[in-house]
Amino acid sequence: MKSAVTPLSEIRESITRTCQVASRKPDITLIAVSKTHPAERIVPLLEQGHRVFGENRVQETQEKWGDLLERFPDTELHLVGQLQSNKAEEAVDWFDCIHSLDRPSLVKALAKAMDKADRRVPCFIQVNIGAEDQKGGCAIADLPDLLKQARDANIPLAGLMCVPPVGIEPAPFFALLDKLARDNGLSEQDGGGLSMGMSSDYETAIMLGATHIRVGSALFGEREG
Image (cartoon, rainbow, N blue to C red; front, side, top):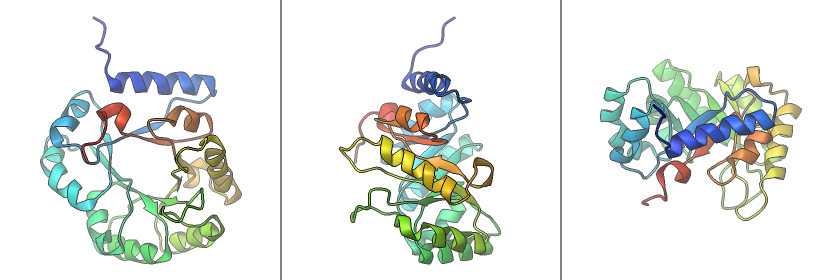
């Protein structure tokens, strides 16, 4: 019996096809960005076997995922939104990966929280790849120092993350993030993952080296908030 076609199955097939074109293994981590979507919208993906989800805010995660994690305890939660330093302890308690480490004060807060919890949470360094004032992320020039600070604080590095400017072809920004990882000695085995690509451009991101893609609207439809 043929499996039903769902947004999740379509995206999985698209990932496989794109990796074939790029001569890559299809070992891309698909993060289903469930921010602002209620639990009842998330359950169908969990029942289809998906286990990696992305949230933007600590408080929303606490309110929404407590019961879901009891039902599906092997789920991974990724923080894909900006993180305030005063929420570092809660983030370390709830998340399995943080994609938005972008400043020295957050390095200190997260290191302290990880020490207190005796738990090391892998972190992506978010780079402000388009030098946009309104976006989070460290400046490209500040990346080497921030990487050193994170390593010195014993924060496990997952790699680099970016959100390209809206309305501009994203490929050059994805290529630049890949170059920054290589220039800073980040191999895929040593914290050289690349968190880049969303619903509208994840295939391009995969072609240019993404290891983690953050897909929301293509899975859930438009956000409710």
